[in-house]
Image 1 (cartoon, rainbow, N blue to C red):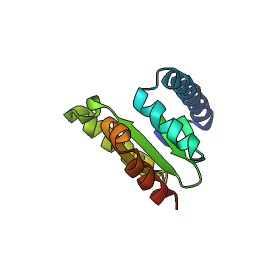
Image 2 (tube, rainbow, N blue to C red):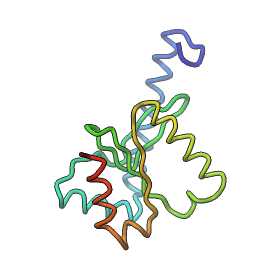
Image 3 (tube, rainbow, N blue to C red):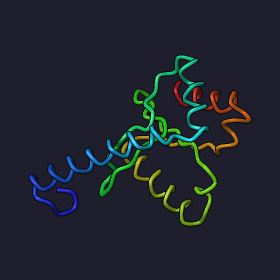
Amino acid sequence: MKLGLTRLEYIEKHRQLISNARKLSKDQIKHATKHEKFLRRELIIRGIKHKFQYPIVIYPTYACLDFYFPKAKLCVEVDGEHHYTKGSIIKDQERSIKLSKKGIKVIRFRNNEVLKDKEAVISKILHYLK
């Protein structure tokens, strides 16, 4: 068992993590940044199917993926300036490694990329969806 838990403890822990992830997802959707909303609108307009603020369990915690494309197992993150501090860079790298162990590829865009060069952002996403 993961985390040295019994099967029942593991199941209960997993349920709690899923519940917390779903709550976080609802909150993240409600407080989405203008950059996330902009990219979401562009994806919808182009008919690119995705999950927005997708809740996921990454032991021993949980998270929300800004954009998730299940068929391609692709995560797209739209990062604000706070993601470029030393602590956040390390945290994001660790999260990307955990996601890659689940078979999920992560690509990141800065906020300004999404607004200033949307065609390049969409093109890169489409490249990974092939």
